[in-house]
Length: 217
Length: 215
Image 1: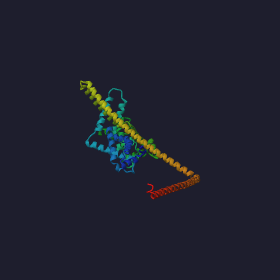
Image 2: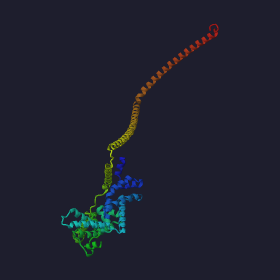
Image 3: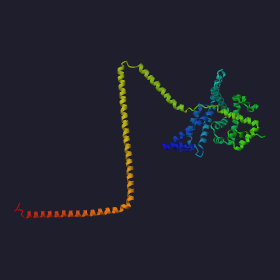
Image 4: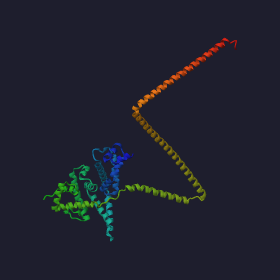
């Protein structure tokens, strides 16, 4: 039993997934879930902009991984496949939200930001915690305003620390495309955030006016 | 001066540019305020992304919550039961207590009995396993002895050969002498028997011959 456990600990992701694929090995699967639970949850939270939904989508990702275990190709890296499946789960959820015409994420954000502003508006000394919360909320909303293709590369590179080449592999696109999406994503994000969080030193052209962008969105 | 393509700044900003590209782009930034402003803006945006903190994962809460919920439920049920018991307690508290005591005793006896049975099963299991271990140990001991014997036999084979030969000869001699004495004994027995038979025959003849004269 102990030798089995130690074997499990030393297993690579690919070996564990192979066990899952060939023998429906639940212990190996639990090991994979334990290893990847945090990063996948974070990815889902950032992509959807909602921590609670992110948790659910993480579960859905692992359920889908187990469902599709037979289609995992052993030649590829497990993590590449996992990121891809998780992103597809997120895209499905975003599509569902759009189809229903819901904007719960932003509505909630408005409420949170309004609440923070109301407190800030009073003569009470500025609460650092609340300020940080408000700034975090602005970032969350800025990311949600970005089209999915730009948000995806930003989230994968900045929050999940995937190299640009790895992102290209996960998204199955050339690395040059990753770079151009990233450049556009960063430019748009900067246009949204600079006027909101100050420190604006960047050049501005009339068509890049951040005020306009926010009004449009 | 021609500015680099915007996409080229991406690996630079994320620290993934090659040494050559890093030097070239770094030099360009020194001399181009436009590019410098753009790249600095990106870098500030990336720093700002860190201000969005995610709450701690709910995994730990998920495991704690059901326990907490059950504990609360149990508390509610227990307090309700206690309250009802107090309200509807029989007037005759003595008989009520006697009944409760009896039922508690009965359940205790049951518990004890089952515990005893469990203990018995456990001890018999323990004995069985001890026997098994013993058997294995004696097996091992036998093995060890046998190995020792074979070894001793191998070692002593050469020197023992002569003594064994001597032993065999002695045994053979003893056997021979025993055989001889046995044969002598047998012959003695046989001759004795022969004498007996002869005497018996003589008596029979005498009886037959003088039967009438000597009844």
